[in-house]
Length: 435
Image 1 (cartoon, helix red, strand yellow):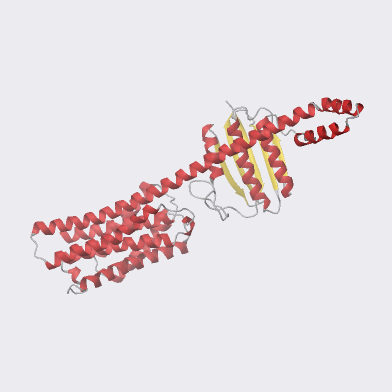
Image 2 (cartoon, one colour; image 1 turned 60 degrees about the horizontal axis):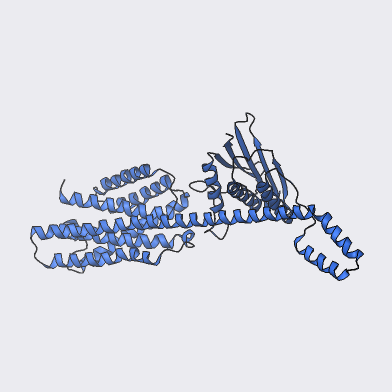
């Protein structure tokens, strides 16, 4: 294998990595990393073989079609989206090579000098791929409105500036190499330096994407934990309030006796003061009982009240001793988020129905929690579980489902979600072992 072939092979490996960085930033994966990596290697090896034919038109067409195929096979997107982004990658790849060939021509070389001059070939390979990387990173940020809500750390801007600075450094190295007499050792060092520069850029971009994902996951986890803590505190306060109401209603006889005594003594002003103070804390309407567990009963009462306000038909069937294995935070997190999601979807539907069922299975081996709500439009599945949101606020979307997922995992449950177009209903079913 001669040195020109090695140079071309390195170029195609770099193009594969740049395409991966661009597509991975924009789209969700639908294959395992090993499968995706193998498909990229095979496709770009095929492009390398095709490039040996020396036909520019065939090379560009193959690059476009093969990148479109990679996008459809490995990422979640439609055909038209794949055609658009494959065309963009093909354009900036061709443009970067053309621009750098024009730049080299300023040094007195022909436009096609890279085909018969190895030093020019190396300069062309490194400079054009660095420019291709910079354009791909810029395009990825332009085409990603769904990530605009997630602010990137300001220091990360340095990563985006790195390819641009590298192009300038590579140009300087090429200028020195083309205008000075260098021995073989010096030429080898220059080649190693420029290839190392390209490798460093690619490694930094991989680290950049990884740090972004870690940062997003950390923020999501922190928000989820804060929401769980707030929900638990809220429902505990409701439970205490309900208990205080029960005690006050129980003590009503004593209050009436006190008022009667004051009336017999003619202390009407004291009666007014007593009633005023009592009215601040006493609520004459005792809460209903929807289930035997006090924490779950509080959650259900809140959901029932919200449904009444929004005109939603709320149906609840919770069998006795079915949530004994869940602790208080688990009950609050699980049922609070399940019912909140169901009410939110049912509110904008025509049917306006939410049904909750908690019962043991026929064999008594498991506890089945089923939440069914009316939903006029079928939700779009999201990668990694869950569904895409139609909310404007994307940052907090999915926090509730992640909280539910943690409770399900903690108690070794099985979670299923599906949509029935026949009756426009969405089903969220969780099965826990009863032991």
